[in-house]
Amino acid sequence: MIPSNFEYFAPKSVPEALSLLNKYQEDVKVLAGGHSLLPQMKLRLAAPKYVVDIGRIPGLAYIKEADGKISIGALTTHYALESSALLKQKCPLLSETAAAIGDVQVRNRGTIGGSLVHADPAADWPAAVLALNAELKVIGKSGERTIKAEDFFVEMMTTAIQPTELLTEIRIPQLPARTGSTYLKMHQKASGFAIVGVAARVTLDANQVCQEVSIGITGVTSKAYRAKSVEAELRGKKLDSAAIKQAAQKATDGIEALADLHASSEYRSHLSRVYTRRALEAALSRVK
Amino acid sequence: MPGRVHVIAIINGEKREFLCEPLQTLLEVLRDELKLTGTKEGCSNGNCGACSVVLDGLLVDSCLVLGVEVEGRSLVTIEGLMGSDGLHPLQKAFLENAALQCGICTPGFIMAAKALLDKKPRATEAEVRQWCAGNLCRCTGYDKIVRAILAAEKSM
Ligand SMILES: Cc1cc2nc3c(=O)[nH]c(=O)nc-3n(C[C@H](O)[C@H](O)[C@H](O)COP(=O)(O)OP(=O)(O)OC[C@H]3O[C@@H](n4cnc5c(N)ncnc54)[C@H](O)[C@@H]3O)c2cc1C
Ligand code: FES
Ligand code: FES
Image (tube, rainbow over all chains, first blue to last red):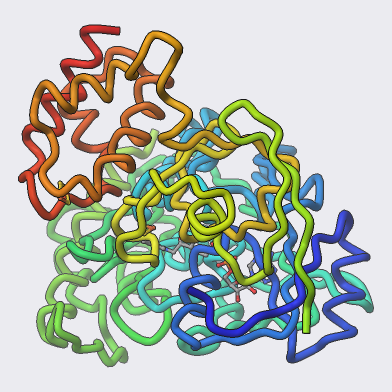
């Protein structure tokens, strides 16, 4: 049961949605798949007076490729992402992230945009967009702006988006040739969320030397982060198991790992190192 | 305060109209307004799958969908499964394989299994188990449920 009632709007266009957001400011919440917002409302963690359902706005759910870049509409469901043939071929990291979320019912409703804006510290998509250097397209009354994934996650459940703005698109820059990527996750058995989730992508040059590497880690601390020390250690190096193993030791450098009843801080840090190593090895094995 | 909203949807093949408060979930609308009490409530937060229904062809938890969200959409609930020739093969298989004890999880499992078999009529045991990850049963230990679904598959 949702304890407090609200007025419901189902706008048919982005401008219509934006004017509602502007009118009601702090009292309004956007509804996408509802799989984070409705549980929050049931628990009284959110009690909006107005709810703007963006599910009726056409043209916000898509997966497209143009000039090597992949663009994903914010309203695209986890299921659509999981089953996209384009992504399986071009960016398996995204298919694997989608498939690792919740269960069939959750993936059929939940959206990538909703997950990113909700910014649960144990959500999967934040790690993926960090590792892919994604750009998030946000639209407000005064126009569009683009936020880099790295600048998007501010704190636990807080992002750089304003309550009067909509996230409309996730853009994945072109992945160079000789790139491999993956997402690996240790599920919390009951909820399905990540105890640790590591998204990794590596790009090699013709001599097997690591040209570019990026690693996004979720579940470990209050927000998903880039494992910059690991990346710095690997860039310009010849990638082999020994180098990866050594670099992965730095997965939680500068990070305070959370402790809860599912995992102690030490265990989470340990898992981060193990999953970082495994993810890098898997990404490396996929370089073509 | 917000008023009740008028909604029209196709439910089990029939056009239905109802009034609901924005705060009512689809599960509450089905059970309290439309008296379709076959769909059950377990956790009410998307974890147990007892409230599973098929919305526009996709399996969803009706406790995490608002009633107002189904305007113009098409819905199948457990009540929509029985045909003119009696119980659906999945319903029969659940009975014949004793795949239920208290029965609270059963409508959700049957809807989940239906959504799977509509998509993949010859799903393997592993696929059945994987697919049903969103449905919890506190009584049976799952094995008989999986057997029932595989038996229904053979009979269909
Ligand atoms: C049982 C269960 C298990 C789950 N397991 C996992 C899991 O394993 N991994 C995981 O990552 N997640 C998991 N989730 C969360 C799930 O992925 C949610 O779908 C997701 O976090 C939110 O997406 P949504 O579309 O449902 O958003 P909503 O719940 O509709 O919205 C979430 C928040 O984002 C805002 N919002 C939504 N869309 C936009 C937009 N386009 N622009 C601006 N603001 C917007 C809303 O106002 C709200 O504050 C689980 C959820 C449940 C119920
Ligand atoms: S009652 Fe809906 S998932 Fe449990
Ligand atoms: S039969 Fe009781 S919960 Fe499944």
